[in-house]
Length: 133
Image (cartoon, rainbow, N blue to C red; front, side, top):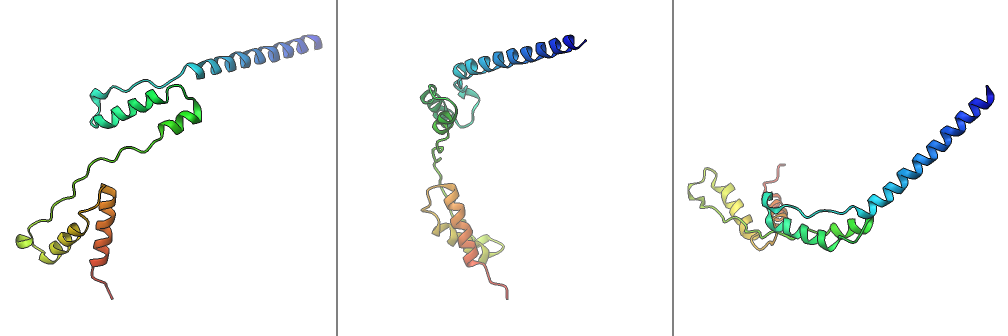
């Protein structure tokens, strides 16, 4: 009975090693062949971003793993941002709050991106907010 168990154990080890070798070979072959496909820009709302991603995919096509990630993870182009215009405060319920907001808008109108504008507006509102004692 002992020789039968040892042969069974040896057979399981050989089968495991053969399966592992086959999976490893298939994995390396798939890694070399796999690549990103161009995106269909017809369904995208932001056509410029889709076109930029397709351009990056083409540029990074020959790279793999970390090189591909570094190549693809480039900052997105900043969208054009037009800051809102100050409102007419003559008909506002709270003229003081409207004037504070309008002055903050005037102070932050030179900001180029939406994030910079929001940060500036937050700073302006913090600076002009009445202090509670």
